[in-house]
Structures are given as C-alpha cells and as structure tokens.
Image (cartoon, rainbow, N blue to C red; front, side, top):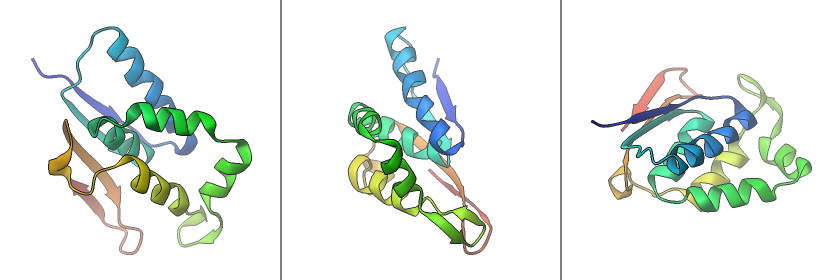
Length: 122
C-alpha cells in the first residue's frame, strides 16, 4: 500500500507541516507520494528532495523580523503580501530544479499570479 500526503496552504502556519512529517516518520509511517499547495508545496518539495531537516533548521532560526521581511509586505497584484522573497529563498536553498531529481513522487498545485489560472506540476 502506498501512502500519500497532501499539504495545504496557510502562509507561515504552513511551517507546521514540517512537524507533522517529522511525527509521521517517528511513528514509522513511510510517505511515498507528497503534494502541496502554496507553502505546502515548498515544504513538500523540500521533503521530496530530502532537504526537510535543513528547511526545519532554517525556519527555526528565523526571527519575527526576518519572517516579516521575507513576506514582502506592500501593495501587490492580488493582495498586500507577495511572498516572492520567501519563495525565492526556499527555491534557492531547499529544492531541486527538476521533479525528476526528487527522491519521492511530488506534485504541486498553484495559481499563476499573472493569468489567474490553476497550474498543476508533477
């Protein structure tokens, strides 16, 4: 039997996904497939690439001011927070360039900020 894990959105609350994955592993539950949306896709990608411990360490080291700066607060299309800085930091530090390089099957669901259309990557 294969076990899949779907991780949701939620901005900084999405960091809780790290603890959930760690708890599942401590219980001996082997996750075969992971998918995510928004911050869940970044945590899922880090997990699928084997870089979850590094991500957890980085997240735990952030101060409140660093989190605020990474969120990119200001007037942006679609809202007050762009999140582009945090997404760039996560991409540079904890992700592979191609899905084929990941250690686990992974899929992400997102919205293209320019067109407003759903994008599914797997």
